[in-house]
Image (tube, rainbow, N blue to C red; front, side):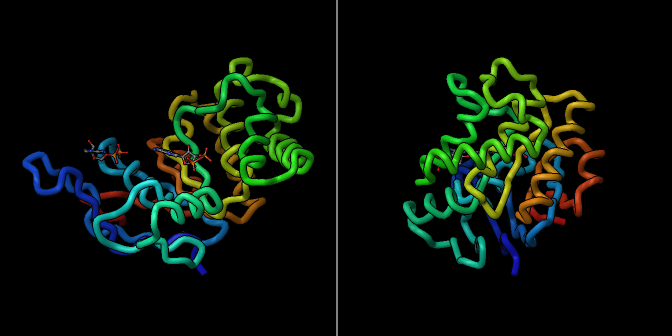
Length: 223
Ligand code: ADP
Ligand code: ADP
């Protein structure tokens, strides 16, 4: 069974106004467990819009969104937020870690918010950080970490609550090529370990080529 299924997704901003922009126009996408898919398109083509619709942050004008086998298309706001917190992890170009907290705390906190005990949350956070080579960095605040380390912590945080879907928007966009590679390898390892599905928007064609599959956003459709 697919983790994510998008069917016939259409989205127009400023609909009915002179400045209307149709960004998505019949986009279809299916992601299976364990699959890492690159989303490749020029800037402004609608990658962020698609990621936000897939991640239940925004809704489409038409089309359907199924996540974990459940139809999310017409859920109310509260149920959508619950589903998003349970099923989806996000990573952005900037790490958005909390600056006052250590790496370990940044990965622990979302679990506490989700009702996990402090002991279990810390154990999982340590395990996640170790799996991306950061076992010795747990006590550092984000400002004391390199860009690549910050981004690896951001991946751990996104996966802290065990989502089935990981959505990443240019996760290596701020990093030099060697660091991008390290961060990408860490991401691949995490995804392979957990069996989740990942959709990763990137301009980096070398990284895109190493993923399981590439989809390109062209004229509002995925090919
Ligand atoms: P990408 O992530 O590929 O750069 P986006 O999804 O951010 O593309 O944006 C696609 C297009 O939609 C752009 O032309 C952008 O200006 C427009 N757009 C995005 N968000 C909004 C919004 N909230 N209101 C109006 N236009 C928007
Ligand atoms: P929290 O439990 O902190 O309230 P949310 O449910 O608000 O988390 O958000 C879940 C995920 O969605 C987080 O990874 C957050 O970064 C992302 N997110 C929330 N709101 C937005 C938004 N408006 N734009 C982009 N990402 C968002």
